[in-house]
Length: 387
Image (cartoon, rainbow, N blue to C red; front, side, top):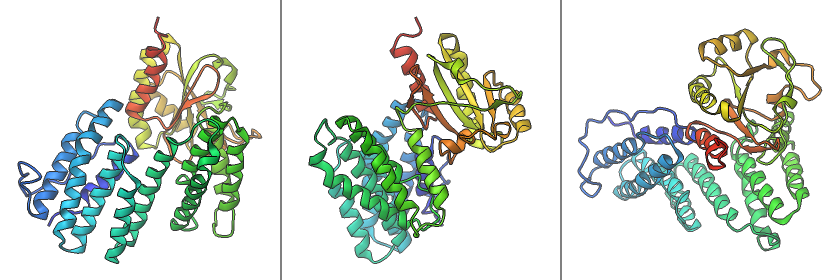
């Protein structure tokens, strides 16, 4: 029996990061083309083979775009073909899953009408089945709408798009309620805040972002949600770590010394919230060490913050991963009126990696693999700082 959720799981893994995933071994021979595939098993074999092959050697952001360009049309066509075949509910659902994620990836590099997503949502509703898939489709439609809306934000023209922004905010709140009361508001509320930030910058209205923040805080601390304090802390922390915001760091190093953020003034600094027990953190560390060895002599500084880990574990991490840069222990840093850094910045998942500019403001965040390399190299190669 074929695992019809394989590629859906792979897609989710890919959207989280460039983690290593392997398609389930197929008993069906891969057809020469999608047109040659006539059964569900043949279409699945072709689509999953194309997915695996197009993901090989993903190192740079250009490679990621190549993956989108190569696989997405196949996923879209394959998903539609499976849906047209009909079959049992599991097969049809699988077809919609492939179609939705492939269309989402395709829309990140090519213009796609909102009608494409809206039609899929309506088609799934007409089946009278797959309520959880309708929610997935609504989320992907929401993210696509946010991408399209970003292109409409221009200087001093917010009045023309205010109604659409309000509609996006309303949809975000409804989607959040779909996740039930215990949902951590990492998405979709952060998408609304990111749009509000762009609007504030384009229209020179810095208060607008904070007004939107307060509206979201009121919503997430209403009686419909149980984790009121945690939700508010997260949103306020996320606001502090948005691109362009001033960044500061404090605490004690694993050696028990006071950390002085002033020592890093006028420098490019990579901040890595990490832990010894965190598998993805340890997988990312060789990449970070390589960037340090390559660019430290040209001005790059790196500081790790041990989030939710013991000082002893962090010392083992330093030794095992050959870390030659500063490591802050949050275990030793409690007592500051701002709290520990990971709580102050609303860090909910690690690794969470930031790049700080010479002006002390956040250049970018959520860096992993190719995005981390590209962000650092842009600072030193494109700007000629290697000279």
